[in-house]
Length: 335
Image (cartoon, rainbow, N blue to C red; front, side):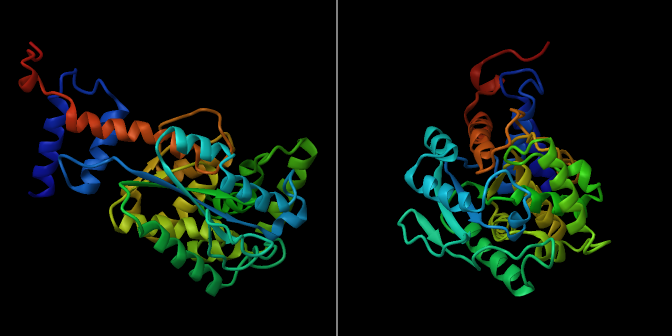
């Protein structure tokens, strides 16, 4: 079946369900996107996995976060014990969860529930020099790609944990969208007004190190984190094997924009879960031409928004597969 014939058949299948045309709004759009991605009029959407990548950031030493760097490791242990919001939401929605140590300070965890795959124990301080070498970036992206392709899930989501990673995402957003750092910078983990001003000034100083930078691979090396680099790779890998990718909030969207700038066709696999309360997220969504499914005022990360969007995606595909047509139900169509 040609793509044109497929699109005609798909539109006809959705429009002849027992409802007015377009009455299910975005649910119809999501169903169509999944069907096109899998090139099937009866797509599958039963299983989902959330992978949380965790890593530390050298710029945290410059006072850009309300929390100290050791919280990254403490939160990974919280994930391992099942106590975080991501654990609770994943359990509630039947989403498998794994946690990857992409570069947390303190060495390997050596725990069954943590996958140790660190590139290094945190990045360098991007205020002073590149966060990572090209070799480290490439290693992180390659490891992420493998994580994005393993298993047999219909949908995947990628969360993150890393003190100061809103700073990394802000700098990525600045170079990828051209918007001013001061406008993009948010409170992250809860900075007060003075802390926010200091963060804005620190990130502006960091950005001034590489004026005019626009190449996504270079931006990633200069200002990213190992968890962000692994998400970039995971997106590239998952898109290659035609998986639906549920994009979470601010940090995940920064990785998504880098991935799209590296390989534009991966955009077709992305469904944007929610609109973060972080101010920089709006710029990223505009650059990605994305309209998220949810707007709940969330700014936690961890993949929490992506997991909350999963039931909507699953329901959209169930509608396409299981909802009766006017003909099959014996219901009269529009007069």
